[in-house]
Length: 308
Image (cartoon, rainbow, N blue to C red; front, side, top):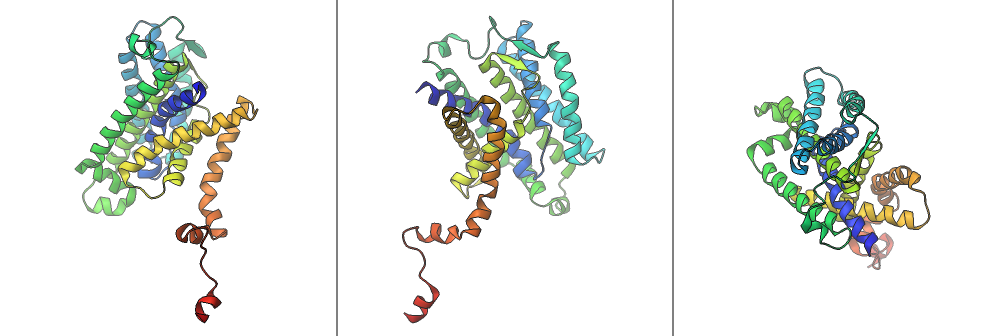
């Protein structure tokens, strides 16, 4: 039971990463490699600040701000510097590695003996691992509600329109460069928030925490879409978090089967690849017809229909 509770709690914390990546990958429709730098940067800033006596809440807010700054740099390189988004993200991600080492002063920092968001009296009174479930669920709800409300505003609709059709958005007077910069800032701010929460939950920050992070975020998005199908925009935000929890259960099952933790990135890539290829499999095996009409009642053969 404790393993299941832990998987759910981690799913909520990592789900914020998926929601942040959803803004760029699905709405703006481009991959942002900055996430592999901003996730550990959020963790590094938060843990370093707490280690120097800053309150956990303020340290978490600082992590969000530094993540937004990294997103701003990527956005400026992309929109003003005319550097391709993939390369711009890689440049900022690479720079973040050195910045993280500067912030921490070493390759990792521990929170041993320090206060964090997870060490208050209320959360410590809960059963084991319920602290991450409770706090993670609360923050996910807040983030999801704020984003859902934002996407319903005129600015949010302009943001969505930019991702749907840049030419149309420009013809409507929308400043598409500003929308892209805003999206990258909000996205990386949320990703840094996820990094800060995961670091506080695990009790340490490591400079290599960002390796393979984009695959984990994409897995949350794709699994949520595959499992829940066609959804509205607000429902898709919830589906991302659900996908993150399901992904954690997949990793839990893999570990229970005896695989090493060193294989997790490999497993993550395989799971994501299978989910991305699922529509192709369904089309090749004609599964859509059976899903639509019921597996037990496949469509009759054409000759039989003609005879009838």
